[in-house]
Image (tube, rainbow, N blue to C red; front, side, top):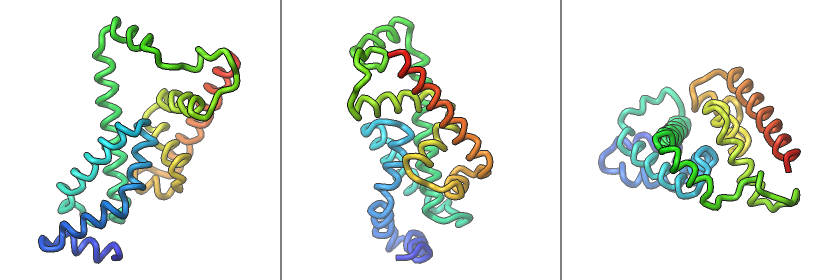
Length: 189
């Protein structure tokens, strides 16, 4: 079903459920990976994706058609992921100093603790995820959408509603910070 037919089916109360099921089937994997790359973990991504589809269901009548339906859905997913990260940051900021120390000593593996410069892909993935998590929100979002989801600057621009030039600058800064951080971590091993 093309996008216009899908929109008509969504606006018709008799065909809305079937059309929305088609949207979920067609877009859930793409939305999952966009969200997963932003929030980092499978569990968090699952929660955010579920919230995204709930919001899409509740707001489908608000879709004006100014952009493609898929662009609007991706924008909602990115916003949900960023809102999740903001809530998590606020929650972490509210922790006491003692709980932060306890959390840091909970046995989580950090790169600084490795005695061997050779480590597997899971460890490298964790290191990269930790570095990405330190990036400012705009840089992190653009980097994840471009690097992991292989989106063009044009697609990202439509989803985030920002200029391609600004996105390119954010991506470039993110890459430079990641390279620098990786280099610093590797020399400290």
